[in-house]
Image (cartoon, rainbow, N blue to C red; front, side, top):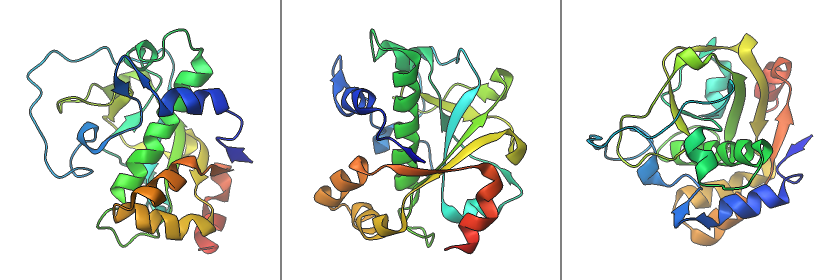
Length: 202
């Protein structure tokens, strides 16, 4: 199953700008160590609480082998993200959060020896396990995971196709054409029970 191709309207909305704000995760919206510098947020925290429990966690391939998921940040269909997509339904807002997680996974590959493939894990997390970001100008869908996420809470694993590796490698090296091609690529969907098979097939 492929994630992305079934949401052309969501992709168009997210790739555009709403009220001058880009909904694709830019490096300045990501926490350290996914970006080089970290700023102190002196402004009041934006509305970030989710109405549900589905979050999208950016990972790299080796992290799939870990016994649980410890990630500094995730993305969710927050109230702040919904504001940036006025008039859109929950599905579009969720897809915007998913794409932001894919962008964050790409950013996390910079300087990494991990295979050049984006990985996003969708999981169901209690609202009490989320906290607002503390860096300045966060992505409106960003949330902080305050506890490790168990694999039992994972709904799906999303990963780039193997033939995306060259473009991902070039995108990490700041090739703008490759970055655009990566943005247009869909991630493949796997059940969490297929985690071992994914790792064995690399």
